[in-house]
Image 1 (tube, rainbow, N blue to C red):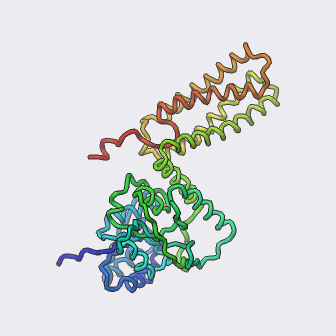
Image 2: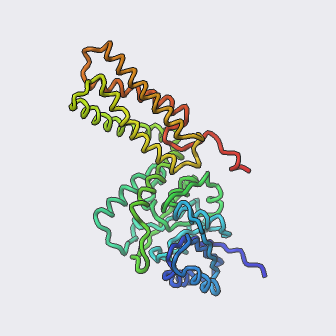
Image 3: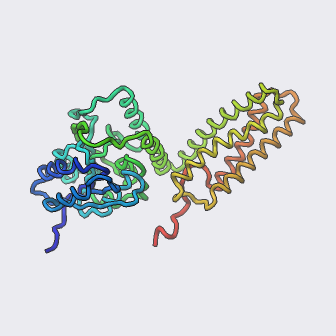
Length: 375
């Protein structure tokens, strides 16, 4: 007997959520009674009894467990894996921790089914009629506001672009341009890469977690910043590398200036101090370069990123040394700050010119798709 094609695919990432699954699946079944749907649990190799619970639930519900034995790219990667396996016309993403209300599924799907131009529907915590069960402290509220503000350039007027409860049509997902999820905010990734035009938000009650543990951590917040970095690269391919260069430049300037002032206090001459202070700027840049390689290794052009980095670093340091030597012979009346700014400025110009040519501008973009990606 051929299995009926579902209209709705629910993609639910799980990690040690076994005790929440029976209640979640029962509430989904009640909300979607009479509809053809499938539930795809994408499990990142849970250590509890998720496989056993899923097997029992699958006997009475259209449920399938997809286990990622080697998880990659966090929750976002799990959601993307589930979407690639989904068969429904409408794709819904929700958490397994019972904080997203399954009873809102018909309302979440309605704007897409009405075909009124809506591309993406969010279950929102921040529109009129919405509420949250958790009591957020001041720091949590500030964290949420800052995260939303940083996403504003590509989230449009969405009040809750951080929401993990959302729905979209299959064809919208299929038009996505080079998805590279990282961490928890897969909704942002899809809104950006699918080029959605019309986003609708429906109010939900975001319930307080009653079982299991929250997966949100400081590490995930840093991954969110890295994810935003990728999205800025995608949406603003010209402006983003310039902005990142200026950020790194500003930090390296003040760090090396501090080293320069320290050397002056220790008795090093103003013409010699830049030579020993500038490596501090190179060290700061190396820290950012390491992050760039770690987070975007599969997207960068150069095959020897650290060899190229060392070449650029030596070139800019040589520029600093030669400039300091020239100033020592020709600029006897220059004050210490002028010497530092001139040496740093010319070395920075060398850095910019060479890194732009070698695609080492901390942006992680490529000139062309690699051959294996189109085979």
